[in-house]
Every structure is written in structure tokens, then in C-alpha cells.
Length: 93
Image (tube, rainbow, N blue to C red; front, side):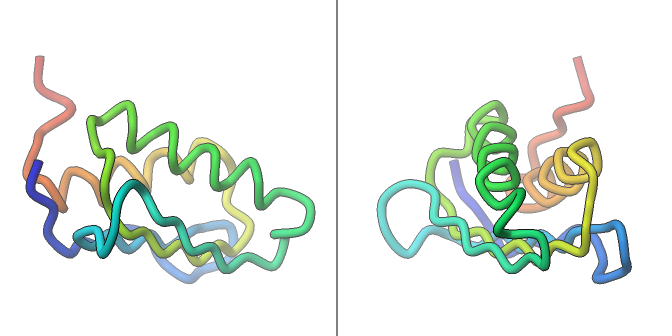
């Protein structure tokens, strides 16, 4: 699956900015910047990886800048960035 550079989200409080780029190596590489990384970093990384894997993305570089986003927001932003990066419409049947 071809990946292009894509972005979704904002840097507003309660949101997360997701940037997806073609993989520079094997697998998913997730770079996380979060003020709550010590408490929730593992969960945020897991949500990003789980969402991308569910969409069939196995190789990409992801940069996430979290401003206290809830899990549902993280999933939504990752999905939006993935759709923009791949052109695959996940909302069609």
C-alpha cells in the first residue's frame, strides 16, 4: 500500500496532531510527544498502532503531538490521516 504524507488534527487542547509519512524503515515507527506521556504514552502508542494495523497500514512513520486527546479522538485523527495518506475510503461498504 502506497503511503503519502498526510496530517489530521490540531494542536488545540484536547486534540492530537497526527502526521503520517512513508516508512523510512521496516514496520511502524511512532514518535510521540505528549504532556501525559508518562501516564498514557503506552496506551496512546497502542491505539495508534492498532488503528493503523486495522486499516492495513503496516509500514509508516508516524509523528503524534498529543494535547490530552481522548481515545475516541486519537482513533478518529489516526483514521483521518490514514485515509488521506492512502486514498482508501474506510467509510464505504
